[in-house]
Amino acid sequence: MLPDEEKEVIFRLGSGKSEHDTRVLATKYKNAETVHEAQSRIHDAWNHILGNVLIKTPDEAFNVITNGWLVYQTLACRIWGRSGFYQSGGAFGFRDQLQDTLALMHTRPDITRGQILLAASRQFKQGDVQHWWHPPTGRGVRTTCSDDYLWLPYVTARYIEATNDVAVLDEYVSYIEGRPLRPDEESYYDLPVFLNEWETVYNHCKRAIDFGLKFGEHGLPLIGSGDWNDGMDKVGEHGKGESVWLGFFLYDVLMKFSVIADNYGDKEFYIKCISQAERLKENINRNAWDGAWYRRAYFDDGTPLGSSQNEECRIDSISQSWSVISGAGEPERIEQAMASLNEHLVDRKNGIIKLLTPAFDKSDLYPGYIKGYVPGVRENGGQYTHAAIWTMMAFAIKKDREKVWELFSMVNPVNHAVNNAESQKYKVEPYVMAADVYGVAPHEGRGGWTWYTGSAGWTYQLALEHILGLKKKVMSYILIHAYQIPGRSLK
Image (cartoon, rainbow, N blue to C red; front, side, top):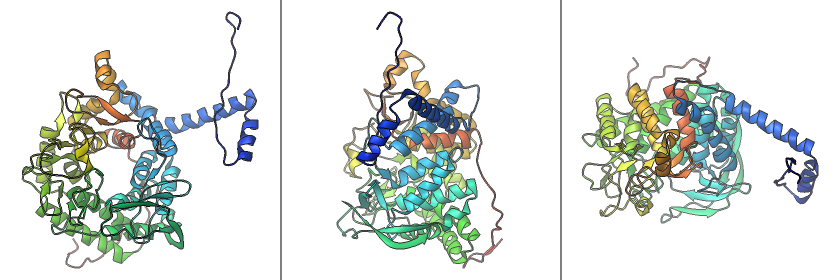
């Protein structure tokens, strides 16, 4: 090239559904004009998606992460790409992408709707679902994981609350079929077949809830091969272990879906949801309180986890946060539980909110593969950001504004790069959420597993709905009925 000469070089990278389709695409984008037009359309589409909600506050770090980056991370990486530097599997997670789409309610609710239908199509007729699957064939894993299927009614209820699109409940979706899990199996990988048996999304949700109504000796839901924390896959390996967190989550699902059932005119299921929720709340507060916080789980043999009795994992954050988020915790206990969380799990020195403490290491307890992580890394005693966001949501619901802002500023990745020393400590991108931040020497404050993490979508919900108060909520014109519930007087 000559001095000061400029040349434009266009690189094309793409894929097609067949050789013919690929050749057509390659020919179409052979000239610069077509390429520039396509690029312009992409820019316009992203500007619309990312600019649909634009905030301006005195805190630039808050503005930077909220205006664009969180939604981009959620949509481009989690939902469309399903790939990141730390994970390139390309699979759909049943609960994962359902949760992610909750962050798109303000920008692309159509994607939320589509994910509800897609997830429903990966449900077995028995009520359980594929933990994850690979498109386009749908080959994936069937497991005894205990919370996956419950995210379908949870997200459906949240979607309807925000859009009033009750028509989604009447969409017909088929089931899949595969061999049942053997008594000694936690999971298997296979290609299920589609059943020519179609039911409404409403009935898919009901089936999921009914499947989740399995309880142990403390009246708490069975944990199976793990709940939200997959790493606790041995707590209930013999089919008797129970999850306290799942009790709170199931309570929330039951209460949310009771409104759906009521508006749908399903009196019988409405009463079932309310009755089961009340019984569950009673069992949680009778059998899961440890004295200063809520326990995390019970092993098959009844040994508690997340208790002052434990040498390791004496307290776990998500039981405390969901006691508030779900509304199932007793008021005075909620205050104590969140105070205990703040005391034991908020590490202000390293700027992290730990999932649990102390980390699993040398005790006789074996909750599962979580113990295989180095103490202080990922779920094992570091910050698992997903749970840290739930902590802040709980404080926001309690209207502890100062603490919410303090903790958000502490966790915000932008603030981990305010100077070179902080950047060298954090070591990962400061403009996207990291799934975890380490909590033990010599790596305190070091981020890990960036991009491909559900914490991005939950952080966006926290920022908009709980910090700024922008909750998209459409009031339905359908009146809620007052049904007499057996054993309960109407007030």
